[in-house]
Image (tube, rainbow, N blue to C red; front, side, top):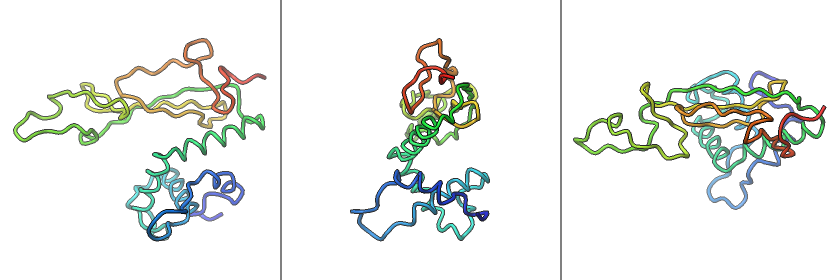
Length: 192
């Protein structure tokens, strides 16, 4: 496995069935899904900006468009659910869970609120953001809070984004709503 290749053939065989088909689409044939998925993994592993990708990965616009497409059509959710189900069936998911949250500042242009010429600045209007944007307003500006539920080995099970001002949700086997394993819908930790 080279520095650029991040998935083995066995790993790709697990992911490939969930990639959307290119059949029936107009225009020229799209780039190989495997290459694009490896570029996305490479980006997250190295922290490199999209525009700074090495030339052998192809145009950065392709990576951006495909990543957005996969997020929008639920491809990433299907892959995560399938991999978690496989790990749960094999008994690899630890019964201990950990919840962590982090806050990320959002740029002032991250919202869709419009400003008419001559109106006061958007930060003075305080329009509510649509619920699906996961952007909260506070005195510090705009922010998003990302929550992640991991098993005892640090593998992500659930990832959710919320408004930055919202409190961290309590998630334990005794509170409501319970944490559920996506694979089996089981509440609380896995049985021993």
